[in-house]
Image (cartoon, rainbow, N blue to C red; front, side):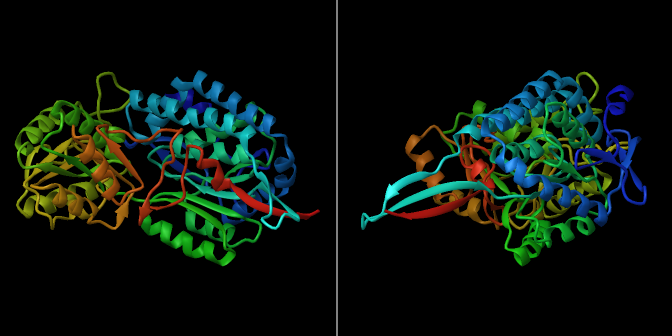
Length: 482
């Protein structure tokens, strides 16, 4: 453990230099598996945030003028070096966040792919040329980088939620200030050091770690030098940030909360549905905005599906993610675990039954057992709120129309999952679901080549795919008379 922790910078990255926080304050980073202190790192202040923004603003003009091929090659080199050091990054993530080493390695593969994808997009930024309908003017459309961007990243995917913002920004020619979650800042610091190694110029990427997120970020958001804000996190915080961003009319992209329905029709392949449920529910210990939050299962197969899911969930081994044979690591904090258990208790008190799990284990660490709930009433909080833990609440439906209505009965709209063998049904249901993404007969939708994002209270903007780089580009029109 000590070896990989010792390689991580403990300071802020501002203008290409690693510096202490103004005032010299630090904070502890802990391991959720044993609650032990991993290290202490710089606790940035609002003054540090302003220094980082100044560095980003100062580097913007030269970075925007850098040839696209060079920007792409920096990203490609970062992809290769990140892939080469996958084991170290995986171990670092497991120590500070809790997921198993196998899952952490999967995140390195996924996160690195954003660098490879956008390394290829950097040289494909283009506009268009056309004649005006009147014929006496030529219409030229060109793209330009948005400019300095504030990136606020979450704790649940410490690497990938950074690379899918940093990748397109670098490709587009934008400079950045990154504020990682204080629970899991080490991975971002290690990534920033790697970006220095591959030749990213000073000031392009600046990192401010802090326990005072609002105090550091609000002045940056209200500063006219900033041109874009991108945030991944809760809807409640996202609403506050959007309000602050309105003062400068910033370009804003928000990837917010979810309440994903997992719909299993009577004609579904139950083997595939259970496999998909395990992926959609248990990926990242259930601590994902894409996690299946509500299981809507046709009455004809509900009992069999629930029994098979409970058997699979109950067979998982809970423990320290660094240990061999462990399937499920700890939740991020004691508060998070208490919140998950509160939702379970509310459901049970309302008439639900736990087929497996549902109890808080004794001892150190923020562990919670994989839990399957049946007979969950529609009024239960577990159906209305984002669980962010390894709990699968199941209810039944009788018709396609009922399934669609209940799936859409939420303020969120990030992702939905549909399992059915009927092609026509899949198309009908996918079109009717009010979500930004739909997984059909699969429990994973995330892919660097696809546009990730939601509708309604799950936010706006897209990350990944051809659409991902557009979030960092402005459209400029030139009308040239003949």
